[in-house]
Length: 330
Image (cartoon, rainbow, N blue to C red; front, side, top):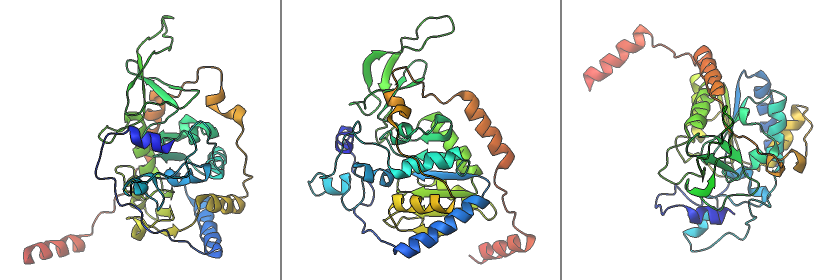
């Protein structure tokens, strides 16, 4: 549960701005903005979705900074009444819609701050997902750094050892036997290297960034969507019920439930939504499922970045001279 996850973290005073009032666009305005977003997705060369806790609330997992968020209520000495366990929660229409958008090539990469494992359980492939803050359904070997899917959500957070050894079989047929730990970041932990690299490369390449259900308060994840604005005609779309600090930089701000926005988006793109299928859920697989990002994938993303990095607009001689005059006057 989100509450047990939050309780497992170290004490930390600065949890961001909490409990900002939500804003709701009209139904017609949401449809209009979703239609515009669909047109931009079709025209874009590289689309990246950035997801936060707001895409999982309809699964029964509370967010953190909303009016009824975990930390908003914590400040009042209260607990959320809505709190489904991570094992019981299932992917939402937004999660399943994202899977189809990626499969059909409308969305090229997904960067998530969520630890609930619902992207994993929706069937979204590791090749298209960076998880910046960890995953309750993933364990990692301290020695070989390989990650594996758990059948049940870990009860440990903060990258603690789990009391079992790595079962990865090396080329010489010997088991690694390194110590396994959870992947959930505590407040002061560094972000996972490969996930962060993949996120940075794809965010830098993106000419359209779409944020879904995040207030964009946590850095560096909250600043990654801005990188699309470095491209000529690059666009940023923010979908969140609460205002974010980057709203003024966005080309469209959609104040609506993400499930509704994704439903309209799929309609305009003529994509048929699919339902969650337990047999496609890696946590339901009886075999050991590897969740490690291959080094080759990081290298491919790096080459993509080098080939398509944003064009930095050089200042004209007149602009440089104007700035020099201003500096001299100051």
